[in-house]
Image 1 (tube, rainbow, N blue to C red):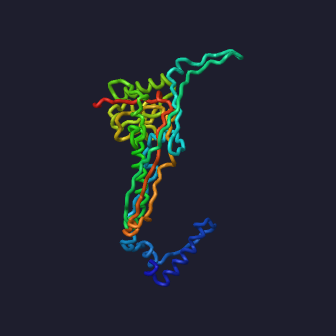
Image 2: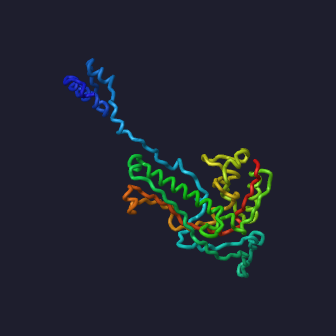
Image 3: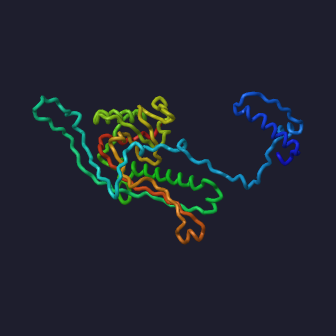
Length: 312
């Protein structure tokens, strides 16, 4: 705008600023100033000329906490491990039925029928790599951040599927559904009725209230709208948070926060490099996402497998 104003108009603009700025800063007193037609026209028609098209590049919105997906893995405590996770496994089948009777002071104390044994769970590696050209990373701002976020998401999905369905053979995690000590339970005409039956079985046998249920897709439960409640934007059923894990063979309900642990060697790591001679020669960066984990089930009676009917 200043390039189109005359010298007199520029001086007038400076005088106008000097007149109004003290008032904007809270200084006492009032100032009167008359604006000339030339300056008034310039202020009213003030437009910013567009810059070159190359100045405005395509930008990806950065993913934030509001766009992330909650995982049932967050319910389980994490035990730092290297190579293997040693898990004490408790059998509390007869603990509640036996109870602990009172005794007078000085008398022998009763023995609690709490049976436990140890088990070693080997940590398994889940990893993937992808290549992307340096030119593309330069041309699309924040692309690397998005790629790192998506790789982390894909690793988390694989972790969930292994923790649920892994059969413990080869390089697979020994998951919930492969363990014979976790029984299939719950009966009823609908999915919500099956969950309710398993909920009460766990509560009656262990005394603990399940804190989560994992299903293949939330659509499995949505037709039964009377059972689903939304708390803070998340679906719940009978007070438990409902989680989804695509590719499950069966649903899982249980006390994830106390009945199981995850052994981890660090967390999910996402790293990038172009140090390989071929990658460097072709201007290609390689991103690698990796995790190592094992599932430890401390109290198998705190979990139930759920077999839903095929129809709604």
